[in-house]
Each structure stands twice: as structure tokens, then as C-alpha cells.
Image (cartoon, rainbow, N blue to C red; front, top):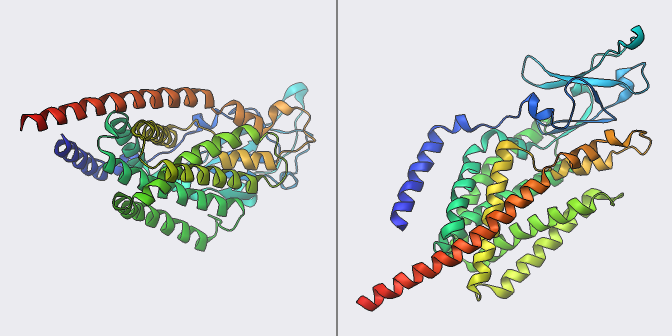
Length: 359
């Protein structure tokens, strides 16, 4: 069984490498319409290009509009990039003036590691989905393979968190040539290094505890902060990463303390990690899960002077996050994975004992 799985896994790798260009991820203007009305949106100070994972802080003075609360429509340019323009108001034959909007003239933050993952990470995402499904059934039986795979995944997540932090505090800027070169190099090095780290974790049990604890702590940290970010006002970025750090350290300590003493505990946690890997892969491919840096920036740039609070970008991001859908999916996958791992491991051990008793 193990040899056959590895053979099919190798064939799948070759297939994905050969057709990797078909796996590029690119959201369309229809995805943008989930958060904005395509032809009539109110934009207060901020705008998100979900296609390029770019957050804009709009300087309203550069638009020189004559309307107190101008409305906008967005469109695809000839190069495929999204742009916005003021929507002319024809009610009662009234019209207003508005300059042409060039988004590159406004301050922006691009999350380039995530963008590279979306553009070139189809291979990684399909592997997360493929092995995640396998792991839900036999992750504990092939424990060493599971350790290698998800330890490598943990390094990718750590690299992603580092780049997001540097971009949020504006130490890295995808618009700057040197930053762009660094981000591109860092992305590909982190993906390659994750393979070696996975093998190292296969050899060392301590690295696997760190890796598994980090993934689970990251998930809980993000979920916890999602519910408290509404009440956070100052130092949002610092509090966000401190929350992730504390949760990750807590789960790493838990793994070091429990280790593999309790098989059921390990099976359940493997199912939790595999379920997150599947959802992460689906999210990169199809979108829908709230992107925490966008929530943080929307909250930080939220203007208290806005009269119609329904139009606040932060509220729109929360409203269309599909968190309930993903939470239910995560719970179903984790519970199903725990059941199948426990059941299949018992069957496997029983067969192994019978084989030994025959000889």
C-alpha cells in the first residue's frame, strides 16, 4: 500500500509540474463584485484590488470631486488590472466633475508573498488538498510522511507571516524594485527550503512538535483575533502578531508536553492540521476566507466621520467573509478525519497482529 501510494504521488507530482501553468490563480472582476457593487459603490478613503492583493489608501484631494460623497464604478483595463472611476450622476440632470483616477498615484500596500502563492502556488494548493484528503483517512498510519509534509507547510506559513508583517509595517514594498526582488527570491527559497525542513522534521521529533504546534496556534490565533479585532483601536498590527505568537507558543509547549504519548490526541490533531491545509488550498484557489491583513488595514483606516456605517469597508469584509461556511467545513473535515484515522489505525494494527501471529 505504501509503495503504491508513493508511486501515484510521484505521478501526480510530475503531472502538476508539467501543467503548472494551468494552475495559476487569478480572481476576476466578478470576484471583486463580492465586496463592491460593480457600477455603483461608495468608497471612503480605502480601496482593495482583490486581483492583485493590494490595499489602497485613496487621497480624495487628488480626485478633486465636486460631490460630497462621490460614488464609483470599477472596470478592467486593457492590461487586465482593475481600476476605479467616479460615477457620473444624472439625477435631475445634475453632473459633477471628477479627475481621472490613477491608482498608482495613491499609497498602497501589496501582499506579494500571498500574491505569488496565488499566481504560482496552484501546485502547492493542489498538494495540500490531495494529501490533506489522504491524511484524513490514513495520516496517522503514514505518520512520518505526514510529519514531513506538514512540517514543510509550516515553514511556508511562517515565511508568509514574516512577509505580511514586513509589508504591514511598510518595511517591504512590492512597488520598490529591490523589495520586489527580495520578495520573489524569498518566496522561491522558502518553498524549496520547506522540502529540506520537512525531511529534517522527519528525522527530528522536536522539529515536528514545533511545526505542528505552530500551525495549530496560527489557526487559533487568527480565529481569535478575527472576533476581537472589532474592539481593537490602537496598535492593531502589533496586537495581531502578538496574538499569533502567544497562541503558537502555547500549542508548541502543549506538543512538547504531550508528545506522542496519547495516540488519539495525535490522530485528532493530525486531522485538524490536514483540514486546515485543505481549506487553505481551497481559499487560495477560490477565495472567500477573510484575509486578516485586509481586515487590519480596513480597521486601522476606518473613519469615524462616515455617516452611513453600512458602507464601511471593514463591515463589508466581515459581512462577506464566508467564515460560517468555512467553519462548518473545517468542523466536518476534522471530525470525519478523526473518526477515519482512529478506525483505520485500529484495522491496520489488527491486520499487522494477525500477520505476525501467522509467522
